[in-house]
Image (cartoon, rainbow, N blue to C red; front, side, top):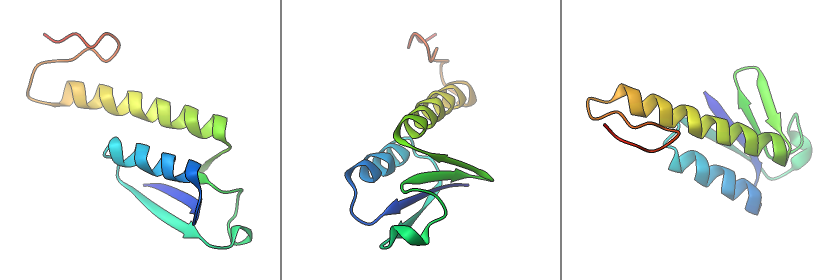
Length: 90
């Protein structure tokens, strides 16, 4: 399960949250009012035992997750195959 740990009022955290919602990815959100109460600098994503933090790492994780989800959806439906790299359909 993906968990988003974020401060209460933060524009970048809002972006992360929107991306997860747009991808329709199951996740939980933990909101901290006191950043000192978290185990890593906020915002961060936890996936199992792995913690992803920092804008560059988080953006890369979200990009890779989006690609993975697109590939999974393109080959797991009963409809036409969509090539995730070109967008071409059958």
